[in-house]
Length: 438
Image (cartoon, rainbow, N blue to C red; front, side, top):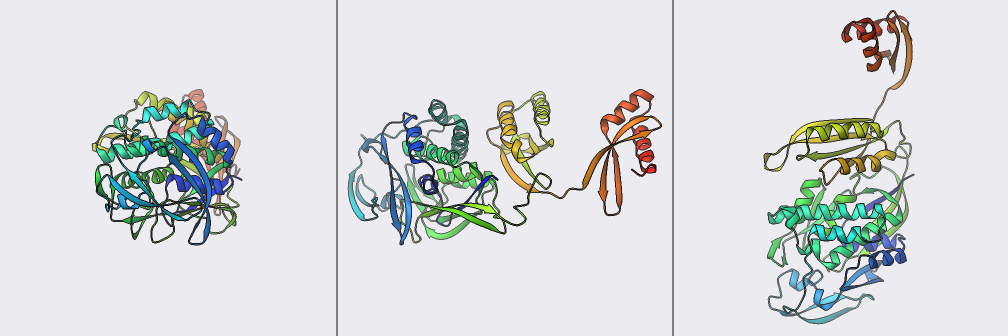
């Protein structure tokens, strides 16, 4: 049975909260530290500890930046516009959950580590991350870069904003990918993201919540959003990108067993405790009986810059690799560009293999994945002797009796052999098979 993760985002989601929750679930800390060292990204240290939030014990994953790389992610006074000068103090939570005040003087000597998507992909490619962890991290960064590009009105390759390029964002996202891979998570359920309201400060000035990058991700990937009315940013762009990249479902099973709970602490202080609760669950009842006969997966992606020849080729490759069905639908995308939506129906065990083919053979940068229950008729393939020769037919059982469908290849073979039309041969096979009451 695949490992299913349920994310309860009652206080939103961020990269550090997600990494902490996964570590609390049992992801190997030593594996994580060794892998992060292989990124060769300077300017930070990792501190993993326990903190208390409203009396609840939680894991804290903290990327402690060198002074020259420091940013304002956890500075509540700066975020909400109360500190306008270069000199200001702010309160942070230490690793034993005691409040203390730090005085910081922000000068132009601070380094803002702006990297574009290509830079980050090179960092990931040259690391010791597993192929699956790299795939998860790349997917998160692609979603984030696409959202930032849309928010700022620039091409994706020119995006080099804080959320994509800063040291802590790289480490948070890599950590999440490594921990998901280490835990063997295959299914991720995210029913809703709780978000705040108002305005926060960024390097460009005051912007509304949800911030534009989060709004773009939520819209593009159909993430359910609930506005709580709490003043502040509960969902960060990194958190939204993680949810969009790893979510396989938004619906919890009607019944499930909780196998383990992990709680990740956030750094910001709001009306409700900044906690992300992650649960490893085991579906029960009807979901437990979901098997190859009544559960399938649907993969879909929109493609607007791929040739017809390439699309025809990828369809055949997907069918040869085990896809149950492949089809295209014409769609219109942003800026009224005509495109095609690729839809693939497959079994769970073929998902990763087919996604790899889609990424390799098309120009898409993202694939939506959905598990679906289905109702199927009992059916079997039989051979029947007809006046034209042996034909294969599919026999489907209905309460009212059997329904017979001649197989395409048999119809073609007998049509060519007897020099008759395809329609005439199809009807003859159907009629004679019914007469034999097979």
